[in-house]
Image (tube, rainbow, N blue to C red; front, side):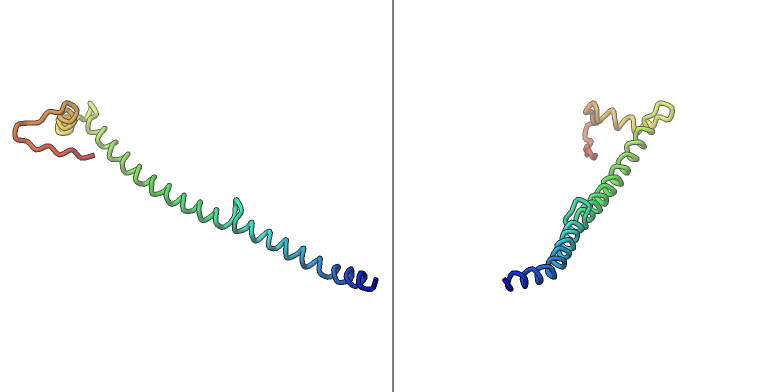
Length: 103
């Protein structure tokens, strides 16, 4: 009987810290591993950096294509650009000419 009362007395002193430490570990785990935790944040920043790099590459490609389209515009037609595109599309070349295709 004395043992049970001693057990109840000691358990009442232990339950609070155990529950408190479990809650602290729960919040720490989800702060690191959760959907909005540190690891997810690092992955998202990495994805944002990759997206910015892709955006800059595509912007440069778009600017190059826009320049080529402007040169083929009927109002400001560049004869060299027209000749280059016609040769490429039709597969023509002059005799003895070396053709190097570049994208």
